[in-house]
Length: 210
Image (cartoon, rainbow, N blue to C red; front, top):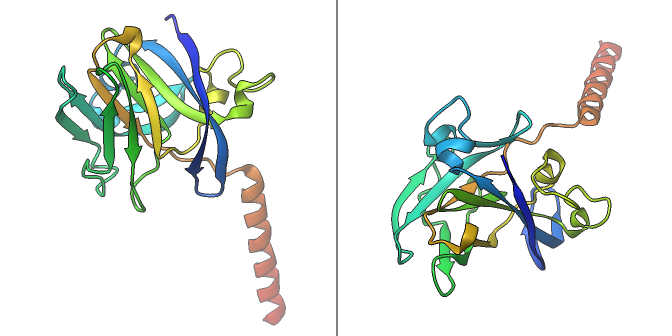
């Protein structure tokens, strides 16, 4: 599978995260042959609600919602992964277009308990473009996204996003835009050790009091 990787642009924006605020982000993308949720990211579990972005056997982000559009950009169908995100009704996303439906932007006003957004895909023709934001240092020398973006390290560096831009492969008319959650972040081993230590101290304290 041939992956054409491009870095679209570096922009200053505020991407609100659970633990930090990212001030300088670069939007990166990769063009992938096929359909995102109807093929590439379904794996052995077909069906829209089982769509999960994965690479190298690592699942990163489940699908939130997909917006299908006609040739004029009017939304014709909204699919929502309500089994995971019952709070989403589709109104949280606003999609706009430039001169045609081959490029545009989106905004998201989801608030807790709505999910975060880390990836978005624009499908047109036989391929789709996948987008995400990373700290701009990741696109520089030695960064995870320096030479190619479609790799596990670069994709794990994805930041939460509340807005973004998109374009379609080959400038074709947009078929649909799909948004993906931030996924489950594994708790670092150091945190587990810290928690185990606290439990140990509590146990010792209780024994002394007894």
